Image (cartoon, rainbow, N blue to C red; front, side, top):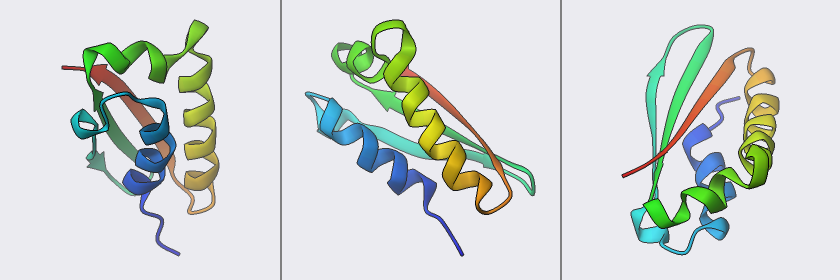
Length: 82
């Protein structure tokens, strides 16, 4: 069962941002055990995606971890602005 992690994360983050045209989600690296996904948002939206105390970012990571564990992988999500 192939999971498109980029689409899952994009679908989770898109409703949170004011500038969805600036949202970039790309797979940075992947091997047999882990996947690294990089999320780039507009500087204005960074606080919305991370949330107070990192609660929203942690919720996004938890959902992604659950999806990745179903296929036997670990996922690392880096959130940054440009």
